[in-house]
Image (cartoon, rainbow, N blue to C red; front, side, top):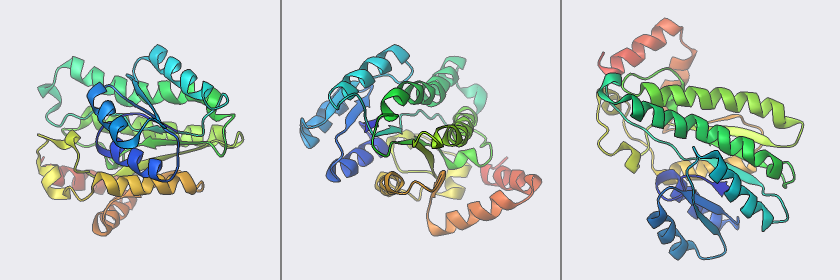
Length: 251
């Protein structure tokens, strides 16, 4: 399995869990230092590659090399790499918004498209895309990140249908706020209202489940209360859903 953004947070937790379960992994990240630390921990059975998911040419080289060592195929892709900035939309430069889009949208696009030729030859191949609760309804002060996760959700649904006949299962994981470095410095009323209820390990457990259960398209990850609240709000009329997000965001 190829894992993007493997050096920290959810990617790191998932790498550890999947390695323990016997997967042979191609662990990628833009941070070489974190990859070297992971190599020290998990050993040379796995491949470690510095890779920017927004660079399609680099992705193609890494995927081809990993597949070549495994008979021309691999069995899984975890599109985990992502960026987040929390704050008013105009607080951040256009360049920052563009970077979030390149990583969160183009990165998933690049990796999924370039992995297909190898997944199509794999054993029970699976693509797992990291989505977010922010794809339930657009979240103020997370506008670009939230929009990128709407894209991931729609992309997952479409490719799940397209690739089903080829035996490739495509799904996404949609957690609430997770206590990772992505949230460092991220403060706002919605964080306080919703709470940071999950750890990277909580999400990694669901990622493992998604490698084994090929029946679901969307995996919601949250504590019991937040899951119930999300289920109720998501079934409410749009006007009420909007009001709930507005209140939680302090708007």
